[in-house]
Image (cartoon, each protein chain N blue to C red):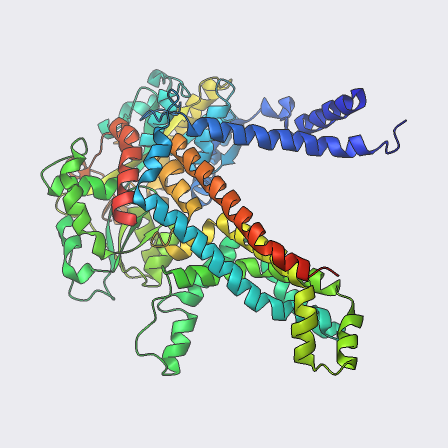
Length: 283
Length: 345
């Protein structure tokens, strides 16, 4: 009799899933090293040509664009999400908490495609935003928001916000309120108490949510596909355009492998950069 | 270790039981693979219902995108998930080249004797309806602009107004080649011409719904558009003008085939025969505003008058640009890569 008799039973489905994921990843890696045969679904012999083809400047540009869009999305999601999470945790009224929670979480139930289509209605030349600005006399001609990086980042922030708010709220809820009370009793005003106590103590939550937002955005497909309209492309869109829409699965696989490597590299960099800040949040 | 092994086997059995189809159910139905949405609904309503009425056999549909279904059938090679598959003509060649299709015995399809020559795609797949990709524009938003030739897309007035599909650049690649004295096989002749069109693009749409939305809200008032989509939008009250340029419009044909390894080949042939029934073909033409594939279909005159609906040999020869379907299957990747690297990005 083992000390935890049910552990193996509970772990075995996870082991099976892990084997499945590893096999799928192995297949992608294997495909990335095979030649594309025009007009056939079967790949040819082993080759590095798919990776040498990635040296075209277009791919470097799209990879850099993807990282930049992820950074912008993570930053703006944090800027918008932190006050929401703070209000969610600190609101005294249960009704207010519920309202904030519902507003924050509801978009999660709509699905990415529906949310993205709603942004097309908002951002279009004849959309809600331009119509309001034109009626208010603030602009003379519609602003070009669709098919721009600004439009894509705006929609991505909306898609990512619920996850970030939930993560930040969890982190903020774990901060002992006595620290803030202690700061107040020593003469700190609300802003100073927030800047010197709450914000530093929430650093681990900030790092976790920014990292999640970044990784979440890196694999974005539907939002840049629909809002970007082919003018703003991320790695997943390239994989679709060049691989799946043209049946060149080996090249699609090499793009995916390169994207995965880039994600690992950027996340490792972020981890290294965040390490000094993590210590600040220890409590 | 032994206990872990037992647990893994138990979990595997659980997953297998979850995913395995019931043989009892699989025996008494015909499984048809098709795109979802209105395509599935149309085939079910017009073809499936008649097939079931004639044979007593229900039809079950597997729906998905072109590539999803292709991949699934590739993985199930020899033991197909479906008995009958609908897909585009050039994608059908990918199925055929990979040995996924049964070679058709058209003697078992009496209605096939009326097939028009353009519908005989290969020994493995035949056309069920046709459409064109051509110029569609919002006449209310582009006042004073007319389109008689594909060349008109290069007009300065179109700068920043055009959208084209991001999933298939073959239409514009072949058109640019033709305007430059080439053809699909010598498409490189049109590369410089197509690069001149780059400033005209405002966006690239990703599917039918995206195309409809972009032309309905006026975001891209000119599109290289699927004729069926344009007719649908007109029906919805959007003033879209569809043009058949003097060089012709780029033809697309959706096809039907029997999967190799299907255990219900006789029923599959009956299903295809129903799909080619002249009355069924007329109903399909009315529903989707597409061209029939049999010569004896009696098309509603109002539908037959629509641009992109071909009902006479003269229309087929003068108004359709037909890209060799096998060549298109072989060239798609090359065209797609060039278009992405030089036009989209």
